[in-house]
View 1 (cartoon, one colour):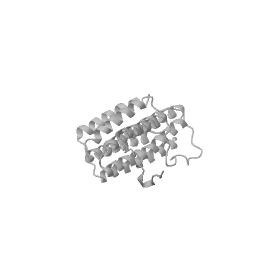
View 2 (tube, helix red, strand yellow; view 1 turned 90 degrees about the horizontal axis):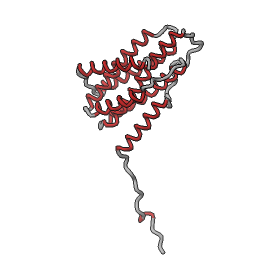
View 3 (cartoon, one colour; view 1 turned 180 degrees about the horizontal axis):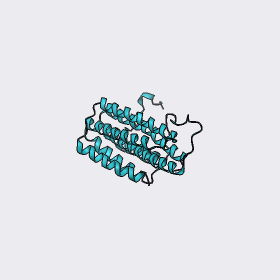
Length: 225
């Protein structure tokens, strides 16, 4: 009996990735972020410090509170940008959002490490922050590319101001936290500029005001919980 030639065989079944695959990938990313398993691709900014000065209990407590807030901010940024990218149909804009989210993973890991060094912990409400930010990101993603990128630019602008406040409030002895925050600020500025160069549209004043109000609620809560 003749053997069928390779060319006569039925082609292998190839399944195209669907929307469910994207959602499953986002669930996996959320679990990685919330479990603390995310790792940085770049070196820890404070690793070059030798003989770090000891902090008083009050200084350590204040630094831990600020780093917990920063950690929550990175959890939110990760969720926000991935939510925006998930529904964005414009390839260049999607790449801008995904690149920013990738660099926010570094920030997330750095904040987590600094919290460990300060014998503290991340916010207990991180799952809530992540879910809310991801939902907000999806909604922003449907607003069109200019507004989508504008939301990213305004987020980064407000984060810059927030990090400036932390740099002023940190104890001079806490050089490690300062180096981490300074590198984070440098990256956030670049994210904002990238979004603006890509065509970000300024957000209306009421949206900016609402974003600031939501940020205040998050930061005041995360400092303690």
